[in-house]
Amino acid sequence: MVVVVHGGFWRARYDWSLGRPLVQSLVGEGWTALNLEYRRTGNGGGFPQTFDDVAAGIDLLADIDVDTSRVVTLGHSAGGHLAVWAAGRPSPRVPVTAAISQAGVLDLRGALEQRLGDGAVELFLGPYDAEAYANADPLSRVPLDVPVVCVHAPDDDTVPIVQSRTYVDAARSAGAKAGLVTVGGGHFGVVDPASDAWRRTLTVLETL
Image: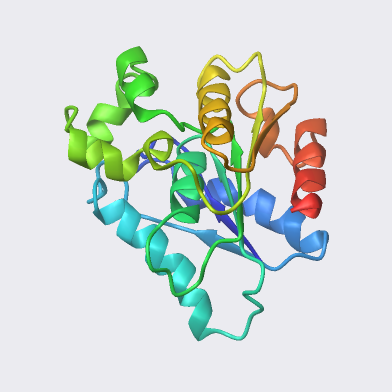
């Protein structure tokens, strides 16, 4: 089971349709896939609403006839943030067994300071608040008990690859299983089913 979490810097104008091509590719490869939607900036999202939605969407799998022995979250950009967050959420009905972050925003403090996405983090979570950011920031939640693989392009000028490198270095230092796979294609190559970056992502998925 692969849970696809779309990106778009948590903004309402970007929706689940971004995940549809990936879901179609995954199904073609023999995976069962869920295209998960959530509230975003501009339609009621933020902390904890967005996170509640992601948790509820994954836990819904317990109520339908699917195999949940292996559940991998796969998210792009802001979806990468949520995919990794979901892998470490407390008391899940359906545990995540691995996460793949595609050009994910995994260091919220760093993204806030760099004003990634024209200040998307502050729009999403508000001004820096230590407690809220500690609960929302994947970097604050290392080490996780499940593996995390970051797929990221060095030429990404939307979410710099340092976001993934910082997370992977911190996770490994804390004793977690984490890896970084570098690909080409900038920020969006990883979500193009025709790209080499997506083929590499599918290979990572098989290894998990």
